[in-house]
Image (cartoon, rainbow, N blue to C red; front, side, top):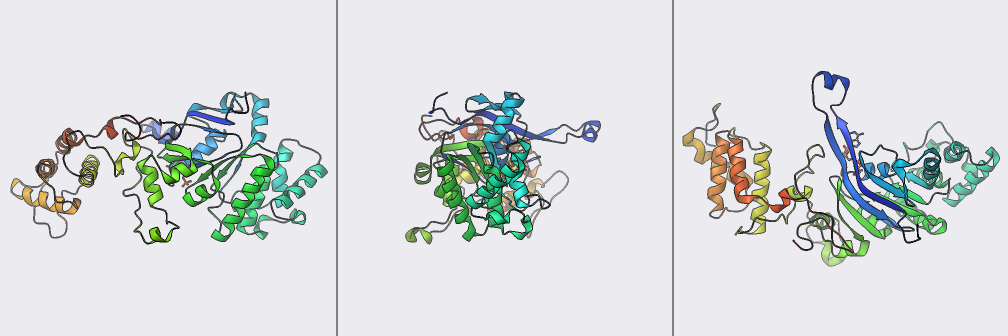
Length: 426
Ligand SMILES: Nc1ncnc2c1ncn2[C@@H]1O[C@H](COP(=O)(O)OP(=O)(O)OP(=O)(O)O)[C@@H](O)[C@H]1O
């Protein structure tokens, strides 16, 4: 092992949670359904750096952090800490790893036991690992309390007597009690008032320098990431889509998801402040049934049209969203509002199909559909009108299938890899 080796190496890590997996489900012959919270992520955390892990709520950040620390049972993959296989460690090595690798949780209200004094909470890891005598432990905790900006005489106070920011300082002192090398910071400031956030981030920064700490900072907040991290890994629906130095990611993102995330953040510069903010359209798909190919393709404004597609990108995005609705059976055949068509059990009668097609087209497309797309959409909707969803799906797939749905792009392109078919050689 050399000093250049990463402190933590994550390789193909997966964590699935299983739903419908109880005895009753089995008796009812219901198939277990995997929730693919983390679905094959690989990255290194280098010694002394702060690596950010960013992405929307539910994309698997906390599960990734907890699984790589061994707090959740991994489904697949490997994590090395100082070149040792974390999941294959014997009990002594595991014990040492538990001292070296710590976590600070988001919520300083629920992460401290309300029946323990804050001194007891901070001392608990020392007691569990049998470090020092009781008096020595007290002395160490008092030092730590001072170091995180509290005072030694607060040792015997209870969590309810502290503010959110102070409690997070207690959480940080507790994580540092065993002199770790590596700390996962899971949204450490999200539950705090804005005015307190910067103080806690500055404290973490000072502690990192003083104790040579390596951080994995989990956050959905890009301004926190930009302020604190050296590199950032962007996560979407259980996968990493981009990783690289913070300045590069913020200035020249390679992945359309990162671009979209950055677009949704208010800008500091005055000329950009008044620019209309775009948020990422569409809902995040469920990790129970993620899209095929690139997982972002159902929302991606740059989803790649098939060769020969002759209209603009905005129209292709609308056509793909339309396909997704057909595939999700998410178009009402029933008349809505003042629609001018009848509906029977077989669907829309032949003579009313043009009215149905017009009504749905008006509702779902912002663009005027140019030829030949008007005819293709019409054919698909005529099939939907007969409740023949498969025929509609097949017709649209035949015309509009994208490489983005067929192939999941790998995370490639040093020194700033991205997982996108538009990035690097195609
Ligand atoms: N114990 C569990 N059982 C089933 N599903 C779970 C469990 N824990 C997490 N999940 C699911 O796994 C996915 C990832 O959750 P996770 O909390 O890791 O995401 P996150 O990016 O940290 O989001 P947040 O910032 O909201 O915490 C979510 O869809 C979540 O509902």
